[in-house]
Amino acid sequence: MRSIETVLALVALATVVATFARRLSVPAPSLLVVAGVIAGLLPGVPTIEVSPELVSLVVLPPLLFAAGEELPLRDLRAVWKPVTALAIGLVLVSAVAVGAVAIALTPMPIGMAFVLGAVLASTDPVAVTALARRLSLPPRVQALVQAESLFNDATSLLLFRVALSLVLAGGAASWGHTLTEFAVLAGGGVLVGALTALGAYLIRRRTEDPVLETVVSLITPYGGYVLAESVHASGVTAVVVASVILGTQATRMTTAPIRIQLTAVFDTVVFILESVVFGLIGLQLPALVRQLTGSHAQWPLYALAIAATLIVVRLLWVFPLSAIAQRHSGATRPSWRVPAVVSWAGARGVVPLAAALSIPHVLSDGSPLPHRDLVLLLTTAVIVITLVVQGFTLAPLVKKAGIALRAGDIRQEQTAARLQLAQRGLAHVEQLAETESAPDFAVDHLRRSWQARIERIQADSDDLADESAGNAYLQLRHEILTVESAELNRLYESGDISDTTRRRIQRTLDLEQAGLTDDD
View 1 (tube, rainbow, N blue to C red):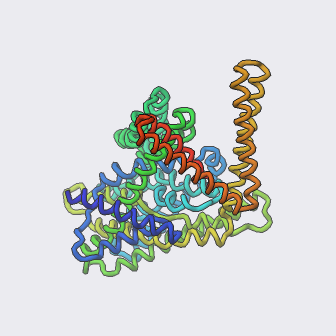
View 2 (cartoon, one colour):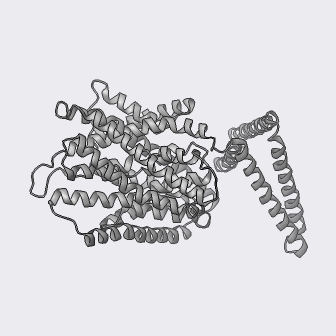
């Protein structure tokens, strides 16, 4: 019962935080972590102990799936080289650097220091996607930071497993064993992810029930994760691969009403799970500090040093690689703008927390594992630091760099695309008229309808130069739809129409109203 109350309290807290985050123009995850820390410091708040299963099995798969579906495959192909350099090279360098700092500053032995380095080596797809979602980054920059955070987990998880096995067994690792484990972890994750995507695709192509398809979509990330972990592959990689593949097939698998429903359901699920996990990260930090009171009084210094190390290493890795890439592309003077944003988009979050929580409490001989609590405390503290520092300052940096897409440019691109689609539709209507493959009355009605649509889109395009006229037009459409909705309710109340008719027409009006909201 206590856990249920905690979850409900976190969701309620997140709702309030999200409201203030939008008004303050700050990322909700960062603000939620701060709120969690403050709540954890209040007297009377129970001690929070997060179980590994809650994060790795319940929370992580759907959040990874949602983040992967947002990654365009076309943009991923364009940035695969820098993604590879970041997902492999930067992870290795970061793990070594954090391990070295931990050895120099903390009482941890070499093995546990590199376990900590492996845990914190990769950026977090959930945190990075949540932070970047509200920023209008150029498509390739968005794809770069998102793909890096999605695909660098195989490398960090391999390092984590190797370092942890050395600590638990006290043995030496061979290159052959390490390469085999990497092949199973990464290759097995890719294979399981592809099979999961294929199975989900075949089922959803044959399902027309919105409820059943929603259920299949929700259990797909869990199925891929569990299946991959059962064969000792990377569940994270499996979920990411499955989500990227299925994201490219969305229009082929489902109808428009089902896609609208799935979007609403996943948005709700993602909001609830992000609320729980980021709130738990904040709540857990004061509890971990109380557990280690007196034994590691210098932990804030350790955490700050490790967080600073991660930031500096990322800067030293990204800027030279960006300069080399810009030189090869013919730039005479390398720009700082994109590498600065990419360097700063390195927040840690759910995946490092799940890895730290999975560290066992005892060694292979049954004795307690030393410094496990310190690793968990430093992991949580670094997550909080990166979410707060980088989360609150990423948007101002993007604005300073001037690489964000302007709202007017985005709307102009959308309007141009809508106009081209409407013109293509009208051309098809004319083809139907020429071939006489449709009744004349239907062709005439469609021709008038699509010509009116083109005129409306062109009017929207003209209104881009006159913001007041565009706002007035949208406001009038909202007003007319509100009048129609009121008339629909009057017809129902007077008994002229049934509840079924009312619901179906109201859904049509709601969809049109939602379309207006998207155009705002």
